[in-house]
Amino acid sequence: MTDRWVIVALLVAVLFGLYHVFTKLASGRIPDAVGGFWLEGVALIGMGIYLLAIRQPLWGQGITRQGLTFAILGGVSVGLGTVLNFTMYRLHGPLSGAGPIVLMGALAIMAVTGVVFMGEELTPSRVVGWILAIAAIWFLSR
Image (cartoon, rainbow, N blue to C red):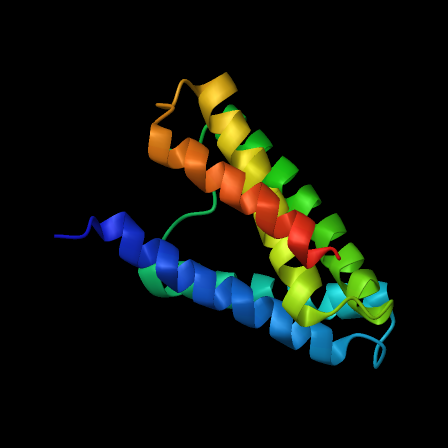
């Protein structure tokens, strides 16, 4: 039986894939920073509606200073990445090459961080996956 997190991860992959498709379609039709503003603004509104629907407080229970700091740093990363994502596609980065390079480059950062800094298990299958991802980045950038 598949772990529940794998199903969620596949849904996230679909949504992030669509994120790249729609960003590519918008690029060159809207200034990069303006596109990023609208993309992130709509995401913020959607998350706000979700929080209201599940009645989750913005402050209080279960929210630590460290958790909030990391969430903010993640937001800064996503905000800057979104603008550069628009720039990448406006500069005619191909959806079939540039998008996968971004996602596999992110994979490499996450994989190394997980093993080196977070003590996650280094398995032979993960090493093979990383090698294949690096090879894919090399091939896609050609």
